[in-house]
Length: 68
Image 1 (cartoon, rainbow, N blue to C red):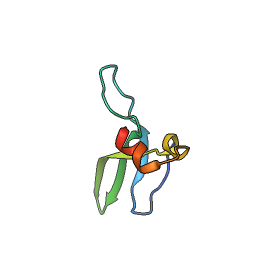
Image 2 (cartoon, rainbow, N blue to C red):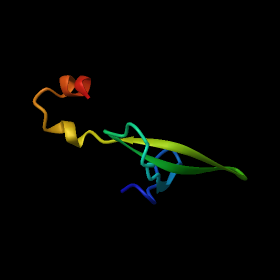
Image 3 (tube, helix red, strand yellow):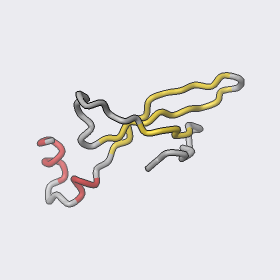
């Protein structure tokens, strides 16, 4: 969903990381590989994008966050 996006802080989203069958977590997040150029150096990093859409419909957002 974010692949190819350029973030305001200079990072570019390269690819979504596909979870392995034994991976845990990720209920409200999506992992990505990002990249940023700093002079001649290219840095790669991990981005954890949070997705709160599942909780948006909850009557009490804060309580729903605590329960998950």
